[in-house]
Length: 361
Ligand SMILES: O=C(O)CCC(=O)C(=O)O
Ligand SMILES: [Fe+2]
Image 1 (tube, rainbow, N blue to C red):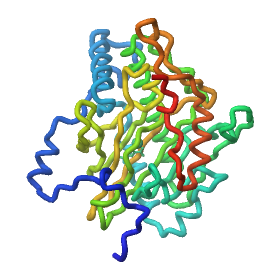
Image 2: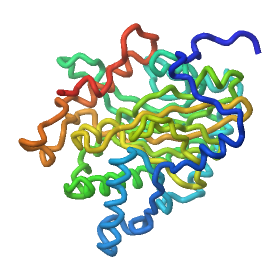
Image 3: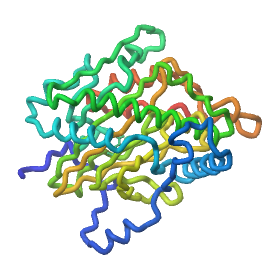
Image 4: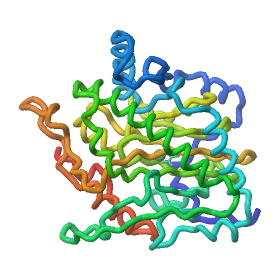
């Protein structure tokens, strides 16, 4: 390989710590990781019809994981292993193609969904290529961040010709994972002491999207990241990672980066910024990042569960009183998205819009 492209180089304080000592790596992998939660009490029936004590236990477990980590893994989640396998297989075939084939469905300023390999996180390029798609088509979003502009845009999917099963595999996976996301929102609502269906209406015209990530082997894994440190801005993220590993989560108790050990067929779930605001900081959206590997490629599939564009995000009234004043001012999710999408195509001198900009104290 020739010169390292400086666009990919992280500032020294954000570079990953690579351990070339195998024993140290093994010890790190043994560290107590994010909680593993068994969803079998609800996976076949929804939260309506099952042993109430088991549900109560599950709700407590979810609440504790959200409070202590902001991240957990779920097993027995009700998404068929075959559905996931089919999507993983088409993703692999799609990314194996020559760049010019993939660029036929590339994202543009007008068609913001599709393929691209130039994402910046905090102004540094990520070592990855991705394919984005709407979970429910089209995604409706304000056409500009201007609060007085009420025009809307429709974001449609772009589907590649190859592999031929691509679209079907994506749509099937999106349907299944969408059901899981809704169930998790019900459990999270219960854990906050509000009715299970509290959040349901926000997702009627959801702006959720799904991403296929491919992290190719990287010749300078000590300098670059697959995804730089960030928080997810939406409600909830449900992630499928393969068996390579690389995702790291910032542990709340001490700020250490903890790697998330791949667990076959499990999903990794994280609280994103909107839940932090709804819960008025009871549950925090936690920073995470992805390390790259000099030998192995890695695939992952995040499902970003996001509300309708007209959602006004603010702390839940039920959680606010004199002792607990609101910690965020209300903001429009649609305008937030429009802001992000406007700045997506350029390297900027200023920080992109962030949820913490709406913090009151
Ligand atoms: O690939 C991963 O493990 C995580 C990706 C991620 O955090 C993201 O796309 O927001
Ligand atoms: Fe993320």
